[in-house]
Amino acid sequence: MQVIPVPCLSDNYAYLVVQGRIAAVVDPSEADPVLRAIEEHGLKLTEIWLTHHHWDHVGGIEPLVEECPVAAVRGSRYDAKHERIPSQTDALSDGDSFDFEGATVDIVEIPGHTLGAIAFITEGNLFSGDTLFIAGCGRVFEGTMGMMAQSLTKLRSLPADTKVWCGHEYTINNLRFARTIEPGNAEITRAFEEAMATREAKRFTVPGRLARELATNPFLRFDHPDVAAGRDPVASFTAIRRAKDNF
Image (cartoon, rainbow, N blue to C red; front, side, top):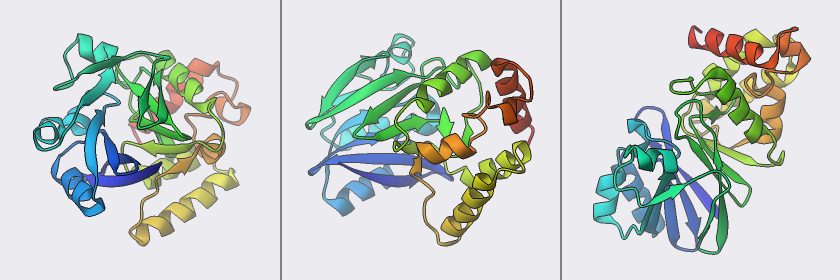
């Protein structure tokens, strides 16, 4: 399996998930960059996977359905029930799985950013949308702080070598914030320096590795003694998320 990041809008990522010459696209915020990437790599787009319904993740669906032989538009059962994803064909729930060209794709519900947020996990790749970023997490728009903390707890239990493909290129700012939470964490400093060099070289900071996220991401470390500072886990997560909202 190959994963090809496709930059969209100002800082979004769509992803082409490739098996042979067949591709699915994750969170296509716009169609043109995806169509160019498909042509460049000689691919056939047959599926669209959506982590949630926000416009900057679903905006390219309808043009792609018109231009490509798309057989499945997969999103959450919640978003299907509320008709929030255009042209959705498949409604997925926690614990569901499906086959993509011989690869098993597992679904984990991760509400908080939105109530219909899901993650796609396949072949050691996690497509986390706006729930888990490199060194950060999404704002809590529709769920509760406790719900978001529980969703991130689910994701941090995945194997440490899992590759994290997230919805936005927010890494440098996220690491700047992480340093305010744990100023003595050398892993955060190292990650920040590497991210700065990566972006200066005009390369992507995705994928991240879950092992590094467990060492650097304050939203996965919210109940670590060095971060919680005596607060209960949800209170700690809430304090960190609110601080990031105002950072």
